[in-house]
Amino acid sequence: MSVTTASTYPISGQLTEPTIHPVHLPRSRVKQSLIIYITSVTGILLLAVLVFHAYMAWTLARPTIEHLQSNPALKLGLAYEDVTIPSANAKTSVEGWFIPTHSKKSIVFSHGYGANREEVWVPIYKLASEMNARGYNVLMFDYGYAHAGGNQLMTGGKQESQELLGAIQFLKDRGMEQVYVWGFSMGAGTALQAALLEPAIDGMILDSTFILNSDTLYHNVKQIVNLPKYPTVPLVQMFSSILNGVGFKDIPSERILTKSFDIPIMMIHGDQDERAPYELAEEIAANQTNPLSRVWIVPGATHELIYQTRAEAYLEQSSGFLNDLAKDNLNLALQ
Image (cartoon, rainbow, N blue to C red):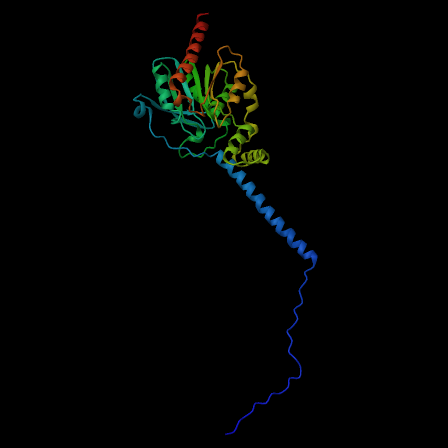
């Protein structure tokens, strides 16, 4: 048997792995890339901040308003009239309900932000019924921005005060001899703006007064998200002017807070109001010199829920104020 032997041939050199040399980027290119990255991230964050504040300003002027749920006949069994009223400056008009009675005195309700004339959490229906039974003609209306299907913006009281003045003139044209404004939240602040322009209002009851300025804006913002006052407030103010056409400078908040109005004013406010600090009501009340003006700070009460939770005391206080005004008007008439 033959055996085949494999021959091994010598290798004339050994195989070696290739050497990989690291690539060194120039320091200038690394620095440039880092700058581009930081700039891009900063730009994105800055854009996000601007968009967020623009959104706040946008939504502030465009609150979501529910449609009307009822009317005085269905809710209260009261006869009423549908009315359309032009604003005092004739730029807009408002729609409302006039609930008549046999007297020459009337109350016009000025609803708050994010609500319509029904303002169910007050509730205005019940209050309207109570005051109508006490001999007051009642006017309930929607501010232009609260009109269902409309495109009017909320202006912090600038145009709303003109609409309220139009409502007051409507009542005077109907032969009303006494016209009282009863405002809630921003509707109370709007009433104060109107009183700066129209001294012929006979008296005002202002519940949970809210005046839009930098302090009240920030007070409400920080309850939703904990942001610093600067640059939050300046940015919202800037975007309000750009997107909504109305800036905070158009709202005479300082004049309202320091004005001594000739007309009698009753301030009603809860000391647990989370949206409008009660100190604001105290500040306004402290500047009033009319002997019939007064302030009622309600312990434990929150924003716009004073009547709902303390109806008996609320009616006693407000009716007492209106009765005092009626006596004063009678005394003036007899002089």
